[in-house]
Length: 272
DNA sequence: CTCAGATCCTGTGCGC
DNA sequence: TGCGCACAGGATCTGA
Image (tube, rainbow, N blue to C red):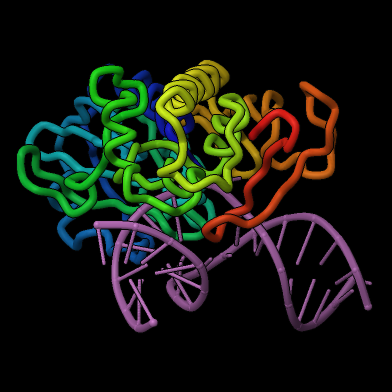
């Protein structure tokens, strides 16, 4: 479900919700089996802690409390829902944080591909250690870096930009969209893309991610902001999910094909 | 190192 | 309406 713009949107929503730094009065773990188990100490350690801040790295949310930090990945179907203490617990609400201001944050994740684990700042972390640069960071994500990284990659460029070791945050929707904007066919070998094309690709990735953040993310089905709102970038997609429909730029027919296990969309006239 | 495919899960939508 | 199957915003692991 969530790529960088969606996680960024959730983070901003959560930041507003916890601005007063409420204390976590009670933690309820209803289903600990996610992609990895929620630690057995989760409730005990977080009880009584003030919820100080939420930040984002790649597609991970990082929660900071008085004495601890924990990370959360939304997997394919994770959402945070805000309710009050008397709000109805819903199916697939795996973890609930009851706050001192009368509100409650519920982590809901039907497919359970999400992650909820403690994190220690400065220590090597299984999930965060091997991540590539943030796409919006101009300093680390540039042509020089990317061409060196892709030099030995024969896999399709689309698969390469979805590899979180190459660059983080780009998932299946925005990979297709960015390649369309850059005019590059998703099937081309990553190591055969010229530096000029990589420059266009980098710019396109930034452009589409920024626009999607402004639009509050893309809601195809599940995605919700922390306040329950849908995103609306789905109305601005050029190619994703539009196979058989007409290209909005040239009116040629949008193509699709599975690349590296994921459905991929492009326009054969606009991309080469 | 690189890469394709299987894998973890539930829900939905489609064809029959 | 019901059933089975394919597929879905991710990312890791396996084996070639």
